Image 1 (cartoon, rainbow, N blue to C red):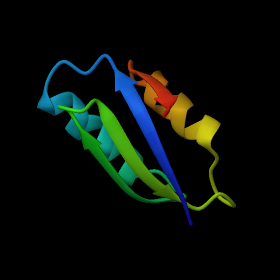
Image 2 (cartoon, helix red, strand yellow; image 1 turned 30 degrees about the vertical axis):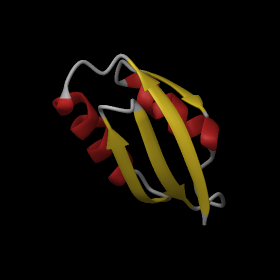
Image 3 (spheres, one colour; image 1 turned 45 degrees about the vertical axis):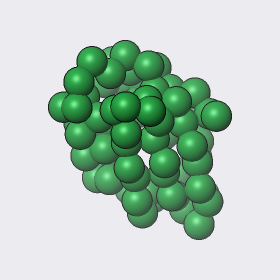
Image 4 (cartoon, helix red, strand yellow; image 1 turned 90 degrees about the horizontal axis):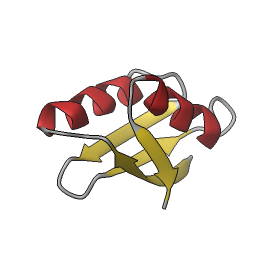
Amino acid sequence: MQHLTLTIDGMHCGSCSVSIELLLNNTTGISSAQVNFESKKAEVDFDPSKINTETIIKSIEEVGFKAEVV
C-alpha cells in the first residue's frame, strides 16, 4: 500500500470534497481516501500495482478540479 497527499484546487464547498472523496473511494486500487475542504487536501491510500499517481490525478481533473502531489 502506498500513501499520497494531494492539494486540490477548485473546491467551492463541502459538497465538492464529498464528491471527490466518493469518486476516489469507488476507484479500483484505492483502499481509502479522505478529502478535506478546509485544507484543500486529499489523503489517499492505494495499491500501486492496480493504480498510479498519474491516474488518480487525472480522475480528479476529469471531474473539474486541479490536483497536485504535495
